[in-house]
Image 1 (cartoon, rainbow, N blue to C red):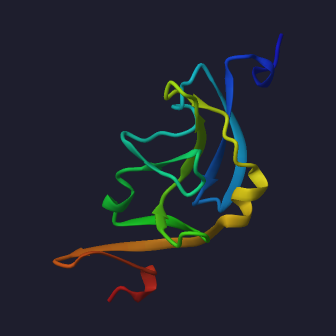
Image 2: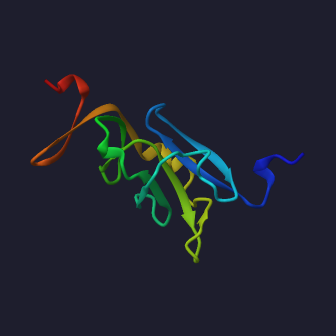
Length: 130
């Protein structure tokens, strides 16, 4: 039996796991991301352009979440992320960015509290909420 990593329709991705505070290479089969990443909706950020970073669109809507930053841009992201390449037809492919490059750029923030008020969202450490 052939290992899934050896099949031509297997694509590699880089996963940023904010809860476990890890950055690792993962693979998936037939462009089905659901075994890796269970989100209803995602949006795309591009701190690793030309690769896409898929992030949970609903990550700010939870009362608490786990967060990380990308050093080169400073933006705060909630939850996990997947980094994927994109071909000329818009299909996901293995990323050009290396695992080592992503590891160097990610700074984990741990668990944060998401407070929504008339000014928008504020992100604080849970112990700072009164």
